[in-house]
Amino acid sequence: MTVATEVEQGRLALLEQELANFRALMAHVHSTPAELSLRNIDIHGATFPLNGELGGDHIIFVDFARRYDLDHLIEDAERSGARDRAARLKEGRRKIGVLLADASGHSTTDAVLTAMLHQAFLTGVLYELEMNGHVSAKLFEILNTRFHQSSSVTKFVTMIYGEIAESGTFRFVSAGHPPPMVFSAEFDCFVRIDPDRLRTFFPVGMFPTEAGVEERLPSRPLAYKKKYTVNEVNLMAPGDILFLFTDGLADHACDGQGYLPGRLESVVRTSKHLPAREIVAVVRADMERFAPPADDTSLVVIKRMR
Image 1 (cartoon, one colour):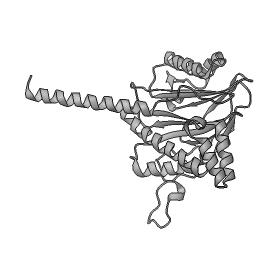
Image 2 (cartoon, rainbow, N blue to C red):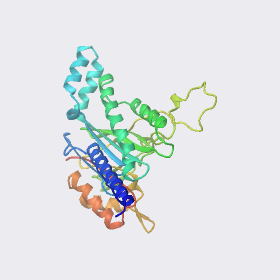
Image 3 (tube, rainbow, N blue to C red):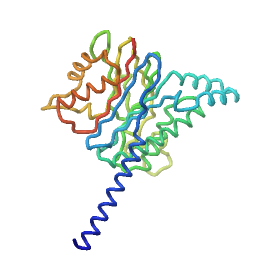
Image 4 (cartoon, one colour):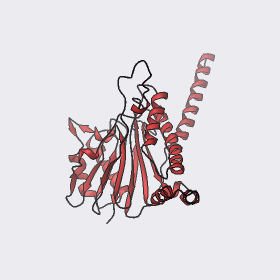
């Protein structure tokens, strides 16, 4: 073995060690809670990276009652006379937030972009709770501005963030993400959602927010993003199921035939009685039978219990 070869092997070993450290760090960031507690609502989500352990998809569950000390925040709000803030914080006990993000690309290092979003988002949520008592669309304006200023123009993140309440109401904002789908227990099929309830905006970081474009600049950008607005979808009947997913599922196809909506609908029709966790597993297995995956795939199932 030559000296040059020994040096190369040493560098390779160091690189492999660094990659192992990176994967361990990202695995911790991308971990999800084993269970989520919300009366009448069953939730489960999973990410299936295309190339091994990590990729560009990411899920964050915000179990407000468990992740944050709501009692302390409520006491602080009431002590300061902020009754509206205290009331909104109390509502947080009966809601769970779900953020589903998809960075452009599906390599291990693309997980860095979603890790940046992970930390910025959770920090922002705590600030929002302390200041407003709930997560507002303003947080996503700030995230969009920050990512636009700090990330490459070729790197962006599609995202959907929503909060499911015990009543079955799902209120959400979308940034270039595939729209949610609802399987109706009554009609035994996916139901059409009014397009006005599915408004979406450019992916996070792609363009500046309209409010952030200063009139005094000598030239305005070619495009900018309108302010985020909140959509609302309702799981009206017990047994209704809401699906959130990344484009790994939306674009899944075999010989020109898409997996959505027909194939997915057939699978859900036969598995709708199962818990959310098992529905995710059944859909994943059927996707693999249908065709080899071509992208990272993430799926969140939100089921209103009977």
